[in-house]
Amino acid sequence: MNSHNHFNHFNHHVKTRSDYFSDVEAAINQKLPKELLLRIFSFLDVVSLCRCAQVSKYWNVLALDGSNWQRVDLFDFQTDVEGPVVENISKRCGGFLKSLSLRGCQSITDTALQTFAEQCRNIEVLNLNNCKKITDLTCFSLGRHSQKLLKLILSSCPDITNNSLKALSEGCRLLEYLDISWCTAITNDGIKALTKSCSKLSVFIGRGCSLIGDEGIHHLAEHCPQLRRLNLQGCQLITDEAIHVISQKCHGLLFLCVSNCPRLTDTALTALGNGCHELETLEVASCTHLTDNGFQALARNCHQLEKMDLEECIQITDTTLAHLALYCNKLAALSLSHCELITDEGIRQLGESPCAIEHLEVLELDNCPLVTDASLEHLLGCQSLERIELYDCQLITRAGIRRLRTRLPDIKVHAYFAPVTPPPSVGGGRQRYCKCCVIL
Image 1: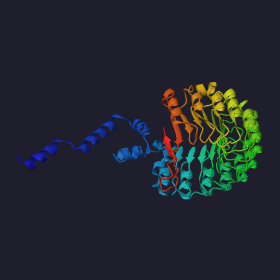
Image 2: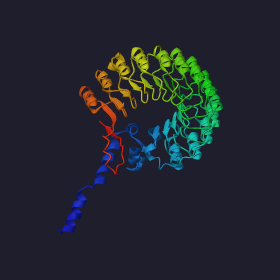
Image 3: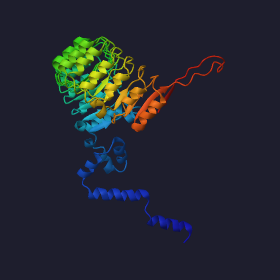
Image 4: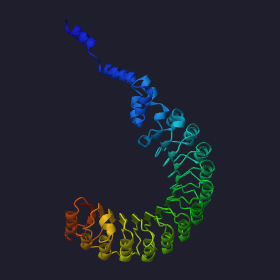
């Protein structure tokens, strides 16, 4: 037998790789009922489902069955996703689709989302973060068709206005979670319209909504007593009055961010202490009017606090740390960056408290010029400490950090160390200063 015939004879008896997989697929299809195959496919991600759809016509039907597409996240394909993709998914999934994320899909327009709203009426979670081309027309469609919507993210969608919130209020009355961060056209009137019917809101995120003030927050507190998380970062119009009404109406509040709200004073902290005893996270960075008196009133009543961001609360002293150490026994993360009046004594009181010894995981002390190696000695007993920030703490030394790491070998320490200033002769007589960021 010549070599050519031998090769043909061999080919006749030996199966190719594609033949092998075809046999395997056929065996699977025969042994497993359609319902079980669908159940298996339901655990696959978008990419895996699309690969399965290319195996055979039968698997194509199974993989693209709407029941497998109840939760779809297209973030990884954001540069490729355009309107027809969303329209096709909507028509295929129909009433099965419950969660869709189009985060960062900047090519998506109202037209695709109108089709989506009409086809997928059981949607519960929709993420449209940074879908910059959508307008109020999308929310009009959601208001008409998405009565089961629970969570909606519209952050960084600049063309969303008060009309969107009015439409959501009229049609999405089960809404529990709304993020309108950086939707800078929204005003107090929009919040008033939203809260008229969306009384089940438990999470409201309005970072950077610079036109929302006390009036809007008053409507939110008055009509949404189940509020648990409130983020108003950068809403610079709000005053103590807004926090006062929140503390009166929303006693179950767990998370509050009012960082960069410069009009707030100790009156706001006192109000929180009086009304929000369940508070777990408080972020008040850059609220420069807050003092020890306010944090004393807060700490005496809010014993559940776990995370606090006090960066650039420039008036606080060791007295605040003394009260946190005494009353807040669950504190796990604390930022004191740019709190320039904090000294080793404050860190001592914190480090020796039960909360620090048992719970403290993160401590940020950037730009605290009075903190020295003695502070690190006071933290040696904090066995849960995972990370400490010491950027620009000029009195902290490498030796002090080495001692800390000897006791806590897994800790991450971030610090600045400026190299020794070179002699004047270097660089033609011009002094050069360089700060090198070193992660120790």
